[in-house]
Image 1 (spheres, rainbow, N blue to C red):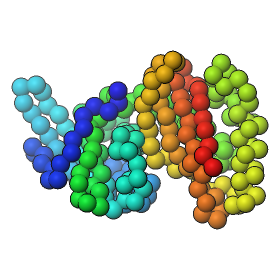
Image 2 (image 1 turned 180 degrees about the vertical axis):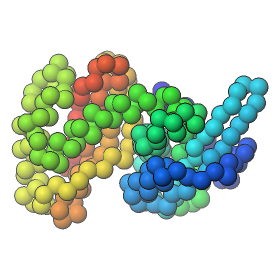
Image 3 (image 1 turned 90 degrees about the vertical axis):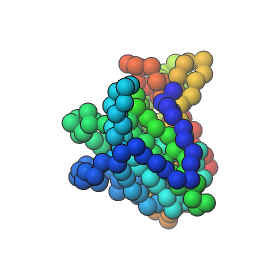
Image 4 (image 1 turned 45 degrees about the vertical axis):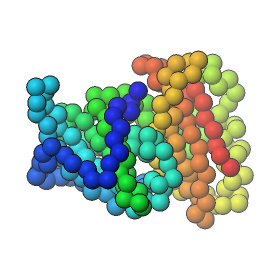
Length: 231
């Protein structure tokens, strides 16, 4: 599982807060997270050293997020953690052993998850396939979608079905403007372990259309095995 440790508390205590400045890349991804969840984002860096070893954690806190309040914490914190991993430079990735993401609800209850940096790498790799899929839709490169799918799991053309469905939506709501990934979930079925990427498309009139893309988590099998758009 990519969800390693859950915690729930009203007052968050850290063993030692590091008084270091946020880097340009770290600041950039914090701004990106704030934009995705339309909330306020703050951070700390904490350090723990004991007989079991040393851990340095990048802690992110998200509050005043209406979207965050409606999502399972597992999917929203996983997405934010992967966003952080993807943004960090190679040197910065070696500085941290964990990423901790917490959502503070309107009731001031803090709920979050801690992720090992090493376990975010394979999820981040699979997320590239999701982003490729979504960018092709925004750029109207529908013909290129079928190259991303598993023919065994999706025998029919994605290109034809998606182009037809979205063309009808655009007639009512205007052209697609962008996409936003807001959640990542881990699932298991007959195929094995899967990653589910949850997102929405934004149209010209402000209408949003949620969709999900399911990708085989097996190393080296970088294919889409399922997708769904929610009207």
